[in-house]
Image (cartoon, rainbow, N blue to C red; front, top):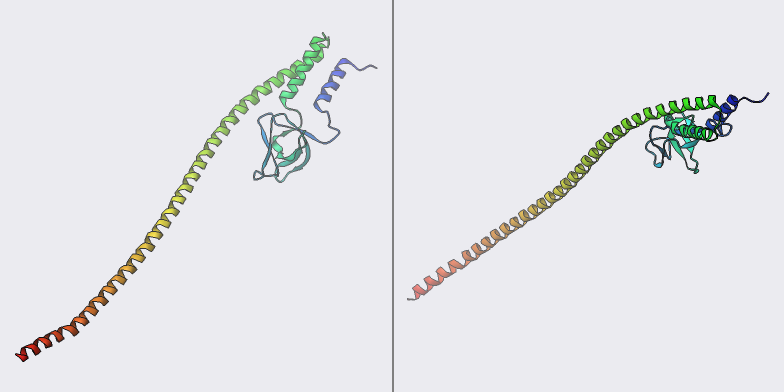
Length: 226
C-alpha cells in the first residue's frame, strides 16, 4: 500500500520538529527573551554569551540541584544556562517560519493537498496567537527589567556617594590628626620658651643680686674716702 498524502505530511512535520533526536539531546532557548550563557551554574559566574530567543543548543547535562544545564552552542561554546529557560522544541517563531515556508511552497506548486494546508494553516494561526501572547509577556518583562535597571542605577549612585563620603571623612581625619600633631608641637615649643624665659629671668636675677651689692659697696667706699 502506498503512503497517503496525510501520512507524508505528518512525517514531514515530525521530521522538521524533531530532527536530530536520535543523537545528543537538543533544546531551544525560550522565545520570551534573551538568556545568559555563564561559565558556571550560578549567577556569580561570568557571562560568556547572550543567547537569543530560538537559539538551538546541545544539552550536555542537567543539574537539578542548581537548576542549571550545561549546554553547547552551534559555534562550539560551552556553558551553563537556567534549565527553566529551555524548551524541548523550537521556538514558536521558528516553527511559524517553517510552516509559512511549507505553506508558500505548497501554494506555489499549486498543490491539491487541502487537508495538509488546512492543518498547516491551523498551526500557523495557533503559532501567531502564541507569538502575540509572548510579545505581550516580553513587553511586561522589558518594563520590569527597566525598573530593575533604574533601581540598580540608584543603588550604584548611592554606593558611589558613600564611597566619596568615606574618602572625604578619611581626608578630614588625616587633617585633624595633622592639626593635633602641630598643636602638640606648638604646645611643646611654648613650654620650652616659657622654661627658657624663666631660666633667663633667674639668671638675670642672680647676676643682679651679685652685682647690685658691689655697686652699693663701691659707693660707700667712695663716701668714706671723703
